[in-house]
Length: 377
Ligand SMILES: NC(=O)c1ccc[n+]([C@@H]2O[C@H](COP(=O)([O-])OP(=O)(O)OC[C@H]3O[C@@H](n4cnc5c(N)ncnc54)[C@H](O)[C@@H]3O)[C@@H](O)[C@H]2O)c1
Image (cartoon, rainbow, N blue to C red):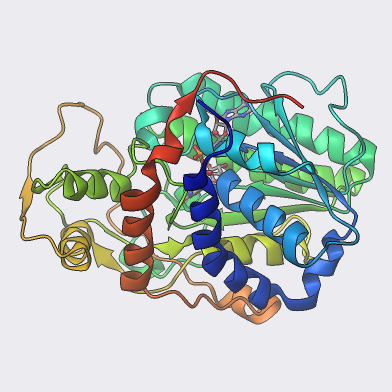
């Protein structure tokens, strides 16, 4: 199959609506990327999709004379998606590198980096239960290699993706949850490989800042969604969308009562880039939406409405014994810190975001197909 298809061009034009929102929210701050070299890890993942498309959008529209360049690293533990080859084939400024970041960074793979965006991890609970040690290693030794690189390259800024999961299952008095809440997390159990290694990751960022002056930034994402989140990912929204696309009832794997808030990709990326470009080293920022805090049953019902489906929501328990072990009952951020210090202000309401996500899957899911190998330039 060719690496350059009209479907991808259509998708890129469609995505511009989201990317323009990020550009508008960042304003002149995007000039910080002019002529710079960026290392992005986890490039084949959901947030990797968003960052690569946003940077490519900046090069096409804003930084024409002084483009940024990106080294996009992934080990493709879950395969290489077709969109990545399509994008790289059109973008001379993107270099794809297959690399496992748990291994030391010996060869430089393309130069001295001004910014490092470290998004490599295994974020889907379904997948990290399958690869628990790889998950832990990536969040701890992988991050340490990136911090060493940031130190030797005298990076302007390195961004670490922690997680809202580091709060575990907070009591009602801690919801909405502030950065100052210290968490209620199990160190042993099916989610511990992820939650606990993200906590150590934050400590590593703090230590590298304290001991070596590395400008490490920390974000705690709260349930992001949007184009680029794979249908087969195993997270709740793609699972629900799969049911709707197949014209069957939406299957709830819990009783439908746990609640979450969801943050659309353009708002989330804006938050991450604001933190990356901020002077706030080694202190965490919640990035997400404060409302609506919605139950899984309400979410499923809203999706059916947005998709115009007459199907129902049904409960069928998962066959996986650990599916719900340590699953938090409520997850909802307090984002006042990011609002006050960074001017962060999410704008995409839940129904509009769901409409975009569903349209993405309906029109462009083919671009998620896995290809044998990433193109090498
Ligand atoms: N998306 C969210 O809602 C969310 C929520 C909380 C935290 N996060 C964090 O944000 C970051 C990005 O999340 P995402 O949703 O894009 O995840 P994702 O699982 O979609 O993508 C992660 C990518 O990292 C790659 N990867 C894994 N281990 C690697 C290794 N050792 N070397 C190189 N590449 C490796 C995977 O192949 C994958 O392409 C992760 O650190 C995740 O834990 C995301």
